[in-house]
Image (cartoon, rainbow, N blue to C red; front, side, top):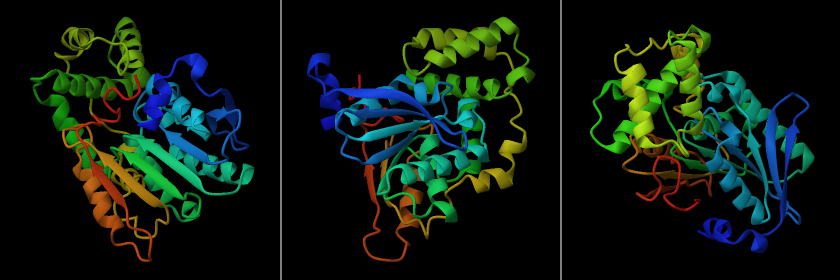
Length: 304
């Protein structure tokens, strides 16, 4: 709520901060948001399956609000997620940036992830080389099992939509399945450019009628592309899934999910919570907030 109120202040009354592009020695790129007098706490922020990645307007508003509160925010660029692909290089980039931030300013590191990015961040924190990097993680709508989620998306993309929310989810999944094909897509060059433009504005200014119109004009009569490739093998999905890997995670975990979210259903967060309860040691009990105010990953009307 405090962050939302900061964003509602007129520009002249908001705390000053600066934005700059950064790059680790290993090549991981990110955007940094930092107030003029930061408190010193670093936060690594991860977006979800969106072509805009760290440039997503929702993420930018959120990062600016955090920066205005005095924190140092680092929004990471993950090319795999931006192309709707499941790449271990994205997970390695998260660990690389976390290590770089620890070297730059030793101390507790917070992580914050949204949607698929939240699940990937948790999977990174479960890696042996990353277990001491994060002090706490805030995860909004994370996944638990990628193989199950992928199957759910396939079914959902074919299911007839009745409400605007169902249409929004269905069209987005169809666009994602097509976009991940890249140059191998069977769409005409004009339709491919239109698809790219629509994805760029999908979670922001795109109108529901525009989304549904594109679906009926371009996608409805086409079969859903076969989702194959080295990034969707059982081994790759298992490697990028938090499932079965959480017993030794040292970070304090805070989970947030919406019971009405059908892109990444809330049972994924519930499964994460259940597995985390088995971690040994005092002070490791996770927290799990289920609220209808969340939407998929955007708090309703909080950061507009």
